[in-house]
Image 1 (tube, rainbow, N blue to C red):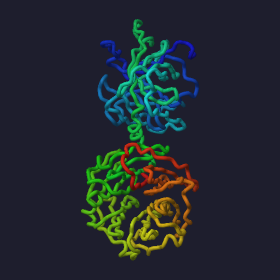
Image 2 (image 1 turned 90 degrees about the horizontal axis):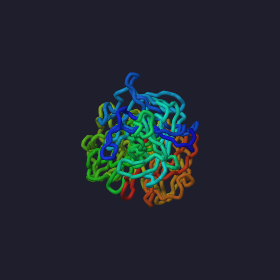
Image 3 (image 1 turned 90 degrees about the vertical axis):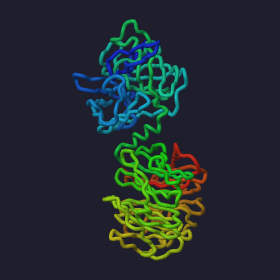
Image 4 (image 1 turned 60 degrees about the vertical axis):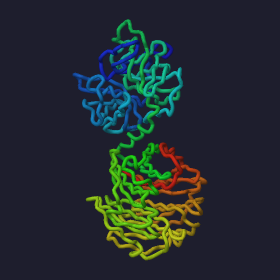
Length: 546
């Protein structure tokens, strides 16, 4: 069927019951059909066919991949009976997505919205080689022409084996839905429910939900209406990204302090970021946050924050996105006076915390086995004095804790062996080169090497060096070519899947990010759209999690 002919777009219903009509509005069952031309070969490869239930009691829907692991579709496709809530978790009925390449993959997890007919469904195995659809960042204008796609009925076929598309016009926009009308005889039919609605740029703006089905095969002959209701997704960027962050695999966890508030965000493997979450809103009020540090242990994100009362607090975010409650570290590891900075790193399942208090450096360990804390130990007592310390950074390299402390604008380095013994302080400038006074420092370990990133000269210059596993150092390299001409307030470094990631908060209230790959090349510097962060940016911290 060519585009020049009248066409209908089929929207598959999760249910086979007819649509109830009341006061001229669509009122109950999910939308059903898209009758129109077949999509060209290779077009809309991210659209999938959904089958829910067994052969004796099956439903057909359409969905669309938002990445290789998650697809978006209508929640009503998975409802046990019309109008019932779809619970999160494994689908009640066996559900399968058939991909563009013909491969059938089981749906193993559902994350539904509670305010609209929408669910994100996780595939048992990623859809290798098929890219997710790009999502629109804004609603289309009233009257805009939009494209719907689906595997539902057409005017002449009960179960088409080809994807069909059709053209629709946007009527009204509500908080969670769009009202659309098919052009000519285009209409949404059974089997198209959950299919995508795309703008002129091919970006996803909605998931088709309910339809009049006028002209669909099996619809009443007297029904001619081609209107439908589509669930909005253009306004759910943070929700979609938050769900995608639940996928097992490497991610960069970031903490950003702004004003007295602490925010947590995640950089996904594809380079996109989630929105940022207020940590105190999740884990409890600690009277504001002065600074904080993050460490990853397997899939969990451990946060150590200096609260407004001058005490250190610990919480963690589980891999499933749930948060624990802040616990008072000083109550467990001992009191410290005048704490100004903190750094954290994981070694195995243990969490090492290094704090600057009264210009001195203290160290404690939280056992991964039972959650208990060792008493704070004065590092100078084991390593020797270096004068008043202003900042510290830590890394795990070869199973050892590596520590850099800044005193008098200069960096000093020590190692805590697996036996608990410390080496003496080493002057970093003597082995990596002289720089201006250091204002911020960060570290990250990769295998047996420890990367160090510093900001100097009031933040106007940034450098990178490596302390190799054999104890030698690379000369400091200027990061201007990679970070650009920025003035850094705070630098952060974290290892994610073997690669060094670096982030910087700047004096003009921006966050920039870059990656040093395992082949020693640097990726482009990209701005971080820190959605949800308000106020003047301060410290930043990075770590990798699985």
